[in-house]
Image (tube, rainbow, N blue to C red):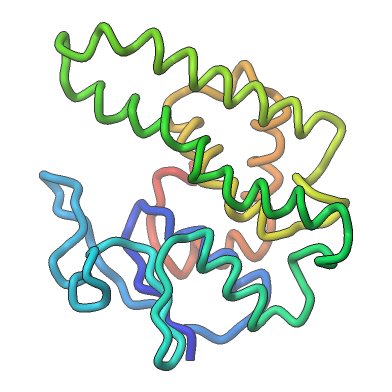
Length: 208
């Protein structure tokens, strides 16, 4: 049985969406952030030494990192769904988006969050951070021009992996200047599988 160790308001929301898209049976084990620190609870340390979410367990296997989890589920349980043929040119683009989401796109958004907590001490960093956010969001927005999905003409794991980037950008009030990205995340959130995942997970502020 696939088990998602799900932390509220976190990247693990997209793993639930992935499993709903594939109509796979799975169990959710819920963990709540500390309301003051916003950190994951110590109970997650019993699942994996890093104490982070998402974590997927599949029998004896324990997989961390949402990109690796997405890749694992699609390779082992999707039966050819949600990924291009590995021999096709689209597969290389698919792999790029799968890794780009956390490898590059999320960094300036996370820096904005953490540096913002420094108050005046963080002010010198804001111009560079904002420039990098604009650089990445413009790149993603241009990639979606005239497209419904990041790769090919159907949903893939690349869309699922990139969803958190768009959600965080939206939460930071950054999507108004990027209409392709804003329209794309609206379409993703309208999908029945995304709605089913939301119903099972409970409140998810980044999905507003």
